[in-house]
Image (cartoon, rainbow, N blue to C red; front, side, top):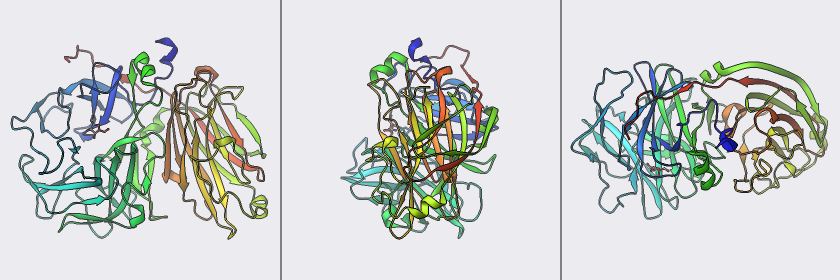
Length: 507
Ligand code: FRU
């Protein structure tokens, strides 16, 4: 359908057609990054799940490979590479004794899925954790194995949080407190913290928490019980789910993949013939400056897609105004922007919007003393369609500032059958830091990374006018009191090479 074909992305991984579901076993093997993903080969809706497979040298350009596995919906069987010497790992065999893991007594058959990558214990056993629920409490069981065939269920749980429901796609990994690099899943020690992440079937968001792992009794305790799994902070405040990390031993980094669904109607997906994307893979580091969150950033290989760029230095944007940024067509962009509020206005303002929250606000049209200000992406010339990605600054009577990062989809499209929510969250901004954001725009996806990746928002938007050559980008400032000064660099982005597999795929 030509009308909708512009919605396909240019540098995000997606199959040529049908429904892509969650990532399964990402890994770097013999020079290739492997992406496995649940996939419906028959339609652009969930169902008939098999395992798709693609490989890449750089996480950006991909080669589709034949399906790795067919007709097993629930991911806890053992798959073995038929030829471990094949760097592309094209053929897989199912172990004849499957399933190798079954739920413990009293646990529902489907409430037990998505085991993690294994890590080594000091005893030399392999350990995994797997999400589940006990009534309304979301939990993660722990198993030890020496052969990946026989598993011993350990007493107790890695962790559990009441009233969070089924934990899907649990992830568990170490982060370094002192070094700017990723850690192998088995690393541990005094300079290491451990992250637990679970995808909440309840509200379809990925929550993580940072804490301490105790190997002797196979438990994990969050640093702050208020920022626990499922009730605390999220990787992303937009559309981002069922994510999974892997350790990239080639570049010594931990890479996070998130599954990005559609937010149009199922009917539109069927018409388009495809549904869902993988977000740009992100490196994940502990944020030593706040000590309370992770930093997520697009993998450096994305920079290789940058084409021509334009720089804008110290652009002043007055209260209530919009400034066009002349970069030509604006459907494939990488934007880096910094903003400063006017110091005098900041002083002068006694108190502003202390109760602010992005999602319950009126979006970018609602004016406060010190915000909103930021970018309008995927906008047409008349601004009848626009997706604001922006900051909002609140000020308490004590003089303290609180900063929010939001994305407003309410005017993103003239189409009626698309999600028009306002996304966002609080973001820590430290003294002497400017407000900074990186935004990747790729046709129907907008990914925002704020303050070096302390908070992120992924939006799927479906403009009808702000497409191809008609898409523009603007600066805006809808604050009533303060001007802002912004400096930006904006690159046009090349398309990635995502090559189809040549032989007929047996389905
Ligand atoms: C996530 C999920 C996973 C499961 C898969 C089923 O949405 O429910 O828990 O493995 O999708 O397709």
